[in-house]
Length: 267
Image (cartoon, rainbow, N blue to C red; front, top):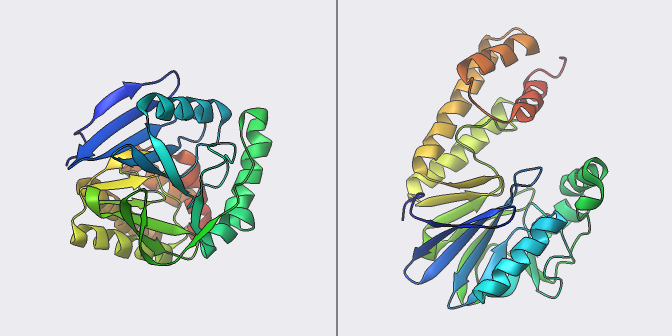
């Protein structure tokens, strides 16, 4: 299965890309919201699990209607990096690791939600769901679908063997990333090299449409170059200018600003 092997369903605001492999479907919902969220519905025989919450009320209504029209019964929501949006399918069990629960309710994830609530106001659902099922590392079956939970310090990634796919928070082959210094870049590179070794068909992220291993390699090259530019730059201004010159078409200027602050904290 390739990243372009999908059919498109246009909704009023968002868009769904539907992939299918051996009887299992991936509905990749591109919200077109103010923070470019992506929500994933993994369906098998009409039963489904959802990866991440939509967090704006209009997207919540739109995705709920889509699921109803498609006759999809959701049996679990995997809440990894995005906890906001608890009004979405409130009676469905919520699955998360202990670290993701803490990240979303008390840690940096909660801080982001508070910031978004202040920025976006009433259109944003800042309510947080209660985790009903605490996940450990390893395989778990929900809705007849086996996923593999891969915990990390913040939350968890998800492997979906039947789709030969991996879900992580961010990738984006043509946009900047938040990189907290050279050590953090090395950690991301090691993770991405693992994806290359495992040979996944799809890499799913919560702020981008499904990507593939060519995109993974592009991100590795970007991170290596980011480190090299930082090593040659005398200050934040020189670093940011050099990165912008190297990647003039990249989106995510706010992410580059944050990365610059991490590499050059003195400004």
